[in-house]
Length: 107
Length: 379
Ligand code: SF4
Image (cartoon, rainbow over all chains, first blue to last red; front, side):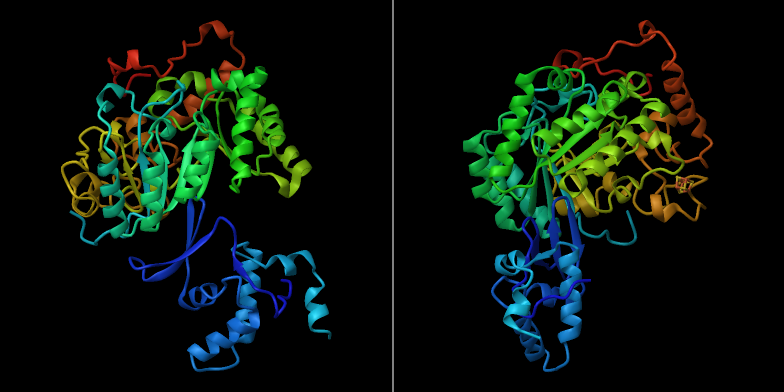
């Protein structure tokens, strides 16, 4: 699984839609002729992937909401998984320039 | 009545109209089309959408016939979108022009599936005439221009399956990103023509090999799904995930069905959305409860450890082949009727070696014939 740049702004991929379903008491991800029912933490992470917030901001927001710390690894792992599944895509800049994260945060 | 309340009808399929510019030999629309003259109004469809959504329906299929023959399609899509449905249009593309696709996009349409519904007429035209090919290409270009993935669905059978390579090349030429090669399911018209439409095992194997070679060449650019006809399997498909579990179909005349072919099942009391609420239809109507759970099953399904995996297969196929919808789908090799399936395949294989003169004439879907419905058990 590839490493997700902290400065990337993931967003729900084209053709997918994320919404809260009262009948299922869950967030679901809708795509052509199909649906994924998300568990609570997946729903919380994906609903913050709006193309505006960076991965760092998503982590901070979740830690704030749940009054906890140390979520970064879990969030990054899930975002990488969702990118691989093509549920999420990265903002154009990050997508076009695979080196951008190194450029922004030199090792 | 079922003891456990059913989950939501996650999948709602609205067959908006039986009107269709094509006359396909394997269309699953009811053979008794004469009964389907009276289509629901816009308001009635919107009520269905609202009530089903309240029960938790979330995926919406809009099909027909050709749904574009309804000039309120855009309005229905807009209402569905506002209610929170993910909207899928299943169309032959006939009638799709710049003005309508732009309006559908504005209305919030999420997805378009372009279907190839004919072999003998549309497919032959497609394979032989540049005009038909250009028409389809134009529609494909429109779909892509409006930011939709280009998804093509082609129904295969005995008479076109040998052209799979050509079909795939043409799909590639107009930039299809997903292609589903689905073998005919034998209901409705296709059932009447089963002997003519059933491919031989050799044909299926050749087509699969061609598809595999094509996949290797085009890679990720075009994803190809090849659905093997279930007559060639030893276990049935989990048809509709079990009747009454997630699917709700409404026919143009308002008949609500747990599967789009359920009308052929004798004695199944199908409710109509004109007479009852979607909630009653889904939860309480006898038609939707008849094949829920496993109480209705007969042996060998009744005591089979796999009964919650495939739900005994397809009720329509069980009825058409054995005369009893509660029997195991004869595709299953545990069914005492399995020989009916293997014999049909053997006949298809034998026909590879026969002179074509002995074949039965094809029955086209045609309003004139629909007046005299043939018996379901006729072969
Ligand atoms: S016997 Fe019935 S339940 Fe068991 S595998 Fe066959 S069709 Fe499915």
